[in-house]
Length: 290
Image 1 (cartoon, one colour):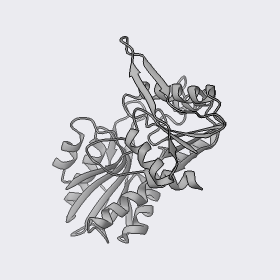
Image 2 (cartoon, one colour):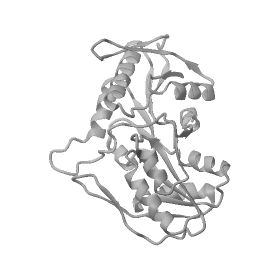
Image 3 (cartoon, one colour):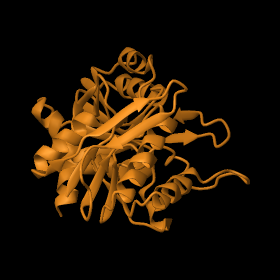
Image 4 (cartoon, helix red, strand yellow):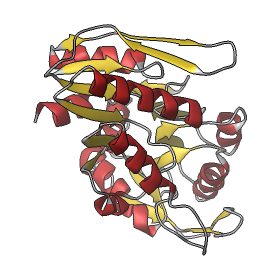
């Protein structure tokens, strides 16, 4: 097995190769004056199983194009099998058709990767794992929630309450609570299908004088997380943390969440950022090793 770290996931690719104790082939990348991407794989891939490691967080279009070029170049070099490890899978949030005429973007991305030679995709905490079953190549979703929970255990948060966004996400809180041992619950949210605006319903929670960690798959604008943290703070929580797998984080997102009452915002390196305190390399390595 050979690891190819894409331009967006150099450090993660290096960590993964180290954990798997396998060969790493560098990926040379530069841009032409007109902004187009140039990719060159700097090693022999013939008859090898190749793992492309590339997150597709913003700028999504550019990073997806880099991934397509990497996959196609690996196929041209005669790779035996191509696996795409995509920690943050762009366009996967549109995981079904809500309104007539909408594009099913997650399906489109998988079809394009398949056309470039990818035969399996591994992603981390996809927005809707159930939607992955409809694709014509295997897409395996793995969870980084235990890694986040273990991080908080090391931060003296054993016994903290684990909260998730929405009833459908309660399995996330349950997964974290299996490690933190503080019980779990969810905060009810509603999304407007046309505007995308999310509102948080005021639900009573058993959090008074307790540490609370609010888990979500993605934080982008921070609006929903800020509403949730404020709601938890108003119910007397001792200390509140905001945790996510994919810290997309607009410039004002962390400030908005901290001002609402959170002690800190913690994410993973599925999207490299200044809050990425946890690496997803161990769960990817475990999956690839199996």
